[in-house]
Structures are given as C-alpha cells and as structure tokens.
Image 1 (cartoon, rainbow, N blue to C red):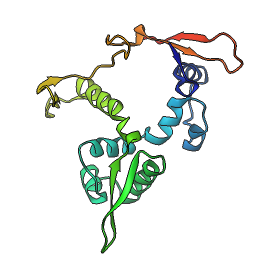
Image 2 (cartoon, rainbow, N blue to C red):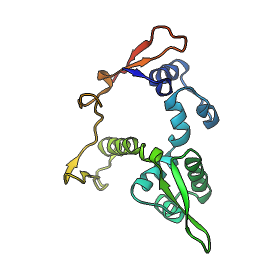
Image 3 (cartoon, rainbow, N blue to C red):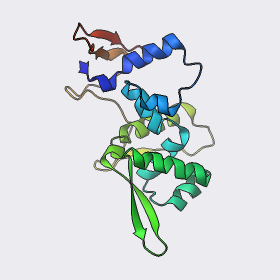
Image 4 (cartoon, helix red, strand yellow):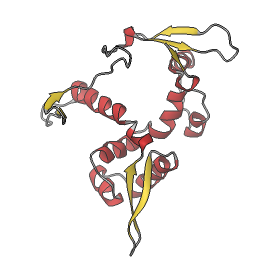
Length: 184
C-alpha cells in the first residue's frame, strides 16, 4: 500500500528512534517537517489542543464554555484557539454583535480529526481509567448500541493492527520504495 509523502509515518518513527528526540522539537520546526505526522503534531499535539477538540466534538462553541470546562488559562486558550483557526481546524464566527462575541466550530478539516479524538478517548478509558471515575460508554447513535472504535481497512473492512500494516514510502528520486512494517 503506497502512502503519499505527506503521510510518511515510518520515516518519522525511524527518525525518532535513531535521534532519540531527547529535545522536543519546536512547533515551527515541526511545521516545516516533511512528515505528515510531525506537521499534525505541531497543530494538535498538545494536551490543550486535544482538550479543545474533545469539547468541540461535544458541542462546545464559545470561549467562556471552553475555558470553564477545561480550567485552561485564558491566554493559553486564546493562543490554542487562534492556532486551530489559523490551520483551518476551527472556524471563528460572530454570534453576537454588541458586544462582539465569537464562537468556534469544527471545519471539515477539524471533523477529520474525529477518529483520532475518539481513538485517544477510547484508549484512555481502556488503559488509564481509575476505579472511582465514571465509565465512558461510546454509543453508535444510528444503531443504538454500545461500541468501541476500531481502525478498519477501507478496501476490505478488516480490523487493522500494527502488525497487519506495511507502510511504503515513495522515494523522492524515483527509486524503489522502502517498505517498513509497523510493529506492535
């Protein structure tokens, strides 16, 4: 299966192993990376951006509501919202004229992050939930049953796991592609 260069996951993983990434890359450096995963992390790869996305998927739209739900400092929230808007993940629109107030809505690009947010929430529930915390149940609204998110092959529908996927990186020089198997 060939992936476009902007989804160069295996090179990112290999580079991370070889360099150790002992120092975190700055978001400007990530944004300049040729690796799609690194570029995505520059936008949504911190706790606060993911918290905003979670809340946006739960229907939160207004600054005050994001702030109240997350207890995030107002300056941090403003900065993360501006970043998500500047990258087309959220759209900022006026909902009140006097005084002017804005709301934030997921764009189609932002909606594309739903599988990521759902998978991360499911992983956290399965592996990090504390005994006293209320359980999170995911429901398939159209079918009215409980569900767990899975990653499935778009061609055959089979559930995918790290050991069932090969990543082919197209070489820039037009040579033979390098194939890396993800391990799990």
